[in-house]
Length: 549
Image (spheres, rainbow, N blue to C red):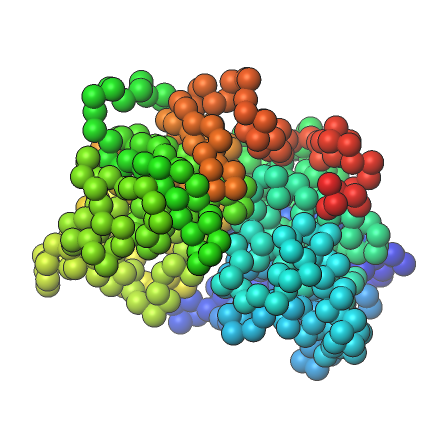
């Protein structure tokens, strides 16, 4: 293999197979990739395109049930396909680092963040423990984590999802690797935090001449990060070009279809009648975690057949409000009403029917579904619990729900979650909520982990189910494109308070509350210069200062 002097990673003819139905099936079909030192390449494509599989292969790694069947992977002169496990272990974490999509599923819950951060530098003899701790604190500060001197000494469950994702990015940077594989690193972040993290990642890449593979389904984000973009579809390369060329003049029809996603916009509904009793009414709710007050006098209503989007940055109180509504966190003051009737503060005091009426769909289907249970069992359990159905009647009802979410019962009833794509898992999460036959569903970031084509399908599914079943939705999200697509009303939260609320059309028209204006101006655009222009407009002279503004 001939190599240019500044080529760091060169992949030729990569083929990867997966074990399915008692045979090996090719899932990556002869992909080539060349990455230079200091270069960032974006890998994009819909779910199942092979982005993460190729990214992991760049570390000489394949998931269980997969194998590299052909091709070469050369990292800085070393062929990873023929390297020993000892040689690969010496590279991983030190010279090649990986930032996973799901930080919640990737951290060890039994160890503090700083302990996990220092592990790689200490084991690879790059830094002593104390030096690595101090460097970790500095990286936490650069990535805008709150209380950077202290947050590392918390356990993973004691920080928010967005904070955990930033801690994982800091951990990947601990050894100052030559190559970082970023696998959807800003998926869990609100738009304001995303800007800070993107700016910090760009700064690190430029300062240390680090190369990166940036895997994402967010085209506006990849436009800010990548020098070149490679488009993938079902394990094949569709096309590759420098970022500006790819954005302005994609050649292939598939690439053009990616550029035009999010065409879905539901029709705007008229306001609910003034005398209509809301399904859920949150009235003057305040809540706390121990001595720390996290919600202050929160109020809003959600009516039948309507969607209220609750938006705000990480830590604004969106998910905490949902916990109060479901009774998982009893308020310290205020009241939750269901159809005009006060609900007991704790779920432990609610009747089975009260529990049934409010269901949740979670952000990370990977961690929300029991990996040892079949899809039929996962959906069947709430059906049996709330309806008492058994045997053939239970099977018939589960099949009906699978039909409702557009999954063929004969194909999916007996499958395990590991045998489903991300979009299919999220559909199962929707089905599990529907199984209780509720009037109200909380959708907690249900599309944030999905590529844009799959996310659009999920939004259409939720819209159809709402029309057919007259459901009320509370849609927690940091994605304002999703808000535009599906919301009837918008509630903006900041630091545990509602700062602005109203019909969607009014909320997206100026004048805005300053915080709402900040959120709207922070939504990435399909312009490679957008992030630089935004930082300049906010008085940041260079990218490196972004984390300190």
